[in-house]
Amino acid sequence: MQEKEFRKLLDKYLDGSISEQELEVLEKFKAELSSNQQPYFKNEAHKNVVKESLWTAINAQTRNPKRRKASLWKVSAAAALFIGLLTSTYFYLQNSTSNTPTVLPDNAITLQLENGDLQIINENGQVEVLDAQGQIVGKQDGKSLKYTGNDSKKELAYNTLAVPNGKTFELQLSDGTVAHLNAGSSIKYPVQFVKGLHRQIFVTGEAYLDVAKDAEHPFIVSTNGLNVRVLGTQFNVSAYPEDETTEVVLVEGAVSLYTEAEGYNTDKNVYLKPGFKGSFDRTKNNIDTAEVITSLYTSWINGKLVFRNMTFTNILKKLERHYNVTIINNNTDLTHEEFNANFGNEPIENVLEELKVNYGIEYEILDNRILIE
Image 1: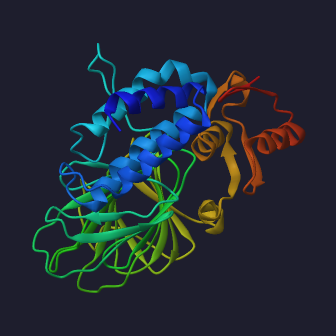
Image 2: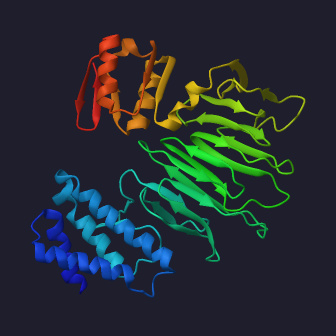
Image 3: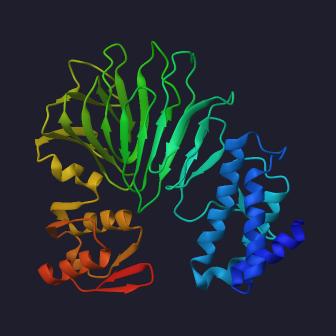
């Protein structure tokens, strides 16, 4: 199929005017594209990533009728680039008169490789992750990405996994450490840990980590000016950029906390025991500890929301991230009020209605925005 014919069918597909016969032609071309070995692809995995990226964008546009016609030129331009000279694992949707790119489909999980290429992670997909030499270092299976262990690496090379609002994801590092990433979070980590060096990763947002034991290589989580040092343990760290406080809740094992400015010092660092939370106040540059019920801080792994003595402002932040919505609070009297609530894996409409019944909180839903009145 020629590019012009493909773009014509794609436009018909997007505005809903495509016939059954034309749709069969388009689907046949898609199948041929899947099996065709094009010279501008680095390898089979690269080809699949680019192909799925394009079709994910197309499907995302067609699911929203209001955006179909307004976005025809974007998707068509992406198709043209795809058929022509697309040479990286991310793509740009652009028109003929503007060089301003629209990068990635909305709400996509992304993986930035060591060379800077951006790879889209489809939650229902299966993708191989390659290093700079083209060797397979990890495999994705649905909502889980696992890296393989290899002691041959002599230098650190990093990947960065980013999870948008409304989604969670599981990552297994090359040493066997498992990280559960909450909505609106990212993690930067070595493709392979190097023998003789500390195992250090960087977290923004919230993650629950089950760290593999390795007495010779301490594991360090760096986030928002705080370092968490462990040998093998399970803990939750919450460090969203908009929060003034970074929280570390220890479920099992032992950890030491120290600021980046202070550095690691066994005599000065703050140590946590299981069942305790360490809170690092970035404005005051100090760490406080308190005994807590750990399940309240880890329930998100199972899709639950638990609020205990939490201000309304913080509750709204968590709801926005969990459901990928925008909430505007027009009732300033509620801003600093504290509430208790438990929610399972349920629609946000149920959550709002329960808040209304129990606390008299009025709300209105307008498209993807929620107004608190």
